Image (cartoon, rainbow, N blue to C red; front, side, top):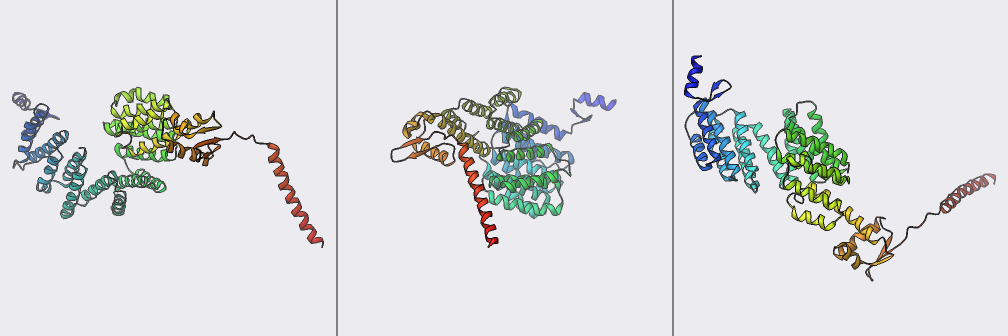
Length: 438
């Protein structure tokens, strides 16, 4: 009772029934300044980091100060400041438990990765940190950082380098029998193979990830990553209904973890696969429903533009959506690839509808009707004729498309061919018997 009264008298804040240590309270007070005065908060946190308090509370305060300071700097887009924070505290990392070091180092590198245009700096920090872990013989942290480096290589388009690193890590992890990390690297390997358009190997890597995951508890984030990759591979087989189920599970997983960016990405993929199946109303429902409202923004607006262009069968509106929302659509390789398929389907359908009334039509006239350059229209019509989706021929000398009517199939013709075939078999049998008679 006396202790409680003393605590109340001093106004010391409590945490789980205990007073917050003074050093930790200083961090909390400094972080609270960030809302109104970020420079003051940064200065106060840097002062705490530069202090010489080596007590357990002092070390804990420095860890918290590093987290708060890097968060403020990430929000301000100051990647070099976060990099300096990592580089200047190597000595501090060497004096704290390895698990805490691993958490802080990975957190700082991830904060740099959250800043647009900081990929080069993040790669530098990863290389430096990997070299440091080798010198300090911190193998677990090294493997984790190399996994991040492989993922960064994948994001930057260095697919072969990423694959070589991932496969080397797999060989090492299998010896250590670290199942959670094995699952993560198998998923990464599957993503790399997918980008290299090696779908069988991508599927095999995902199967290995699932097999390893079945033997352990998998974090919701890792399970969501598995679901996204499963949905991606199902989409490559044009099994869009199955893909939707996987993307929905991933959306729920990332949503429960408050990972807004990843949840929004999954929502975009859910809308995409509904478009690919021609389910316009379902796609509109996702946009106007609870999910679309909760994650409203440029990404959802981009998919709304695509849905409406598809619903109107408007190639011009479709191209306008791609141009207006380049970052949300074109720069996402998965969405861009499938929307190109959709565009080709729309183009074929529109061309078939436009040329249907004609028996012979100028290519220039078709191009003017559909609003595309004549060479593009000519190339597409040629492809449709070769694929048997259009009965006709191109008269390139005159610049015309000559169309034929569908020939009615004469059943008697097929029957006559069958009779002649049977007759040939009978005659062959008679000749064979005649040879034996002789």
